[in-house]
Every structure is written in structure tokens, then in C-alpha cells.
Length: 161
Image 1 (cartoon, rainbow, N blue to C red):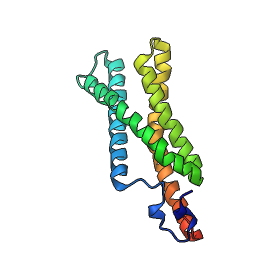
Image 2: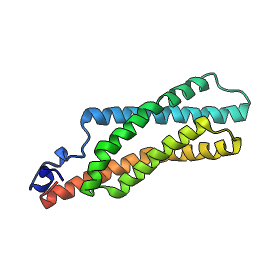
Image 3: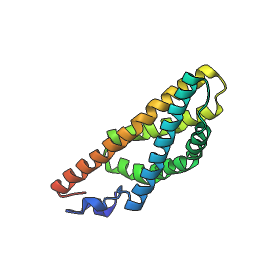
């Protein structure tokens, strides 16, 4: 464990797992773009089923949503190597962090499955799972952020970070 985490009264804002403001901005923008484009894909697919014709913007939304996958995979890898690893060592936010990790990994795996799945029945199950996980991701992110603030506050009150 880093020396700072053993010393008294270290600033919770400088804890080893804290993501810099620029990193938080990039993460937020990537996840927001994925969420909005995913919601557009979901809505476009719904319209397609109801009207029997694809909306003109659906292909663009699909391309944007799918094109975000490499960046999101890189982000997941970065978080695993830095934020998650150190957080696990510190025993900080384990429940909300594990939830975030599982949902994020599930999003990646179901997205890859949708790209490569051949069976329509399997694609339907993957699509539903991907949509549910897509709704859970911002909920989990808010929970994890709130838990991190609470954890840092408790550490500061106890005189450690």
C-alpha cells in the first residue's frame, strides 16, 4: 500500500484511486456518447419493428455506437490496471466497484456477442441483456461515485486515506 495511505490526515482528494479531472471528463464523455447512441439504436430498432421501415438515422447511430467499442475496451483496461487494482488493495468501494466492473464487462461481452452472433434467438437474448446493462451502467456509476465520496469522508474523519 502506498505510504500516503498509512499516514494520518492525507487529503482524500489525493487518494491513489482518484481519477484526475481530465480522466473523469473523458470517461464521462465516452460513457455518455455510448449511452446516448445506444438509446438511439434502441429507439430506432423499436421504430423499425413498429413501422416496418428503418429510420434514416439508425445506421449512423449504430456506426457511432459500435465505433465507441475500442475506446471503451481501452478505458476498461486502463481502469483495471490502475483504478480497480489499487482500489481493491485499499479495500475501498468493493461492492459498488464490483458492480461497475461486472456491468462494464457485461456490456463489452454482449456487444461483441451482438457483432458476431449468428442465431437470431441468441441475438435477441444478447440484445436484451445489453440494453438492461446499458441502463444499469449510469446507475452503477452514480452509486460508485457516491460510495467513493462517502468512503473518502469516512477515511478523512478517521484520520487516514
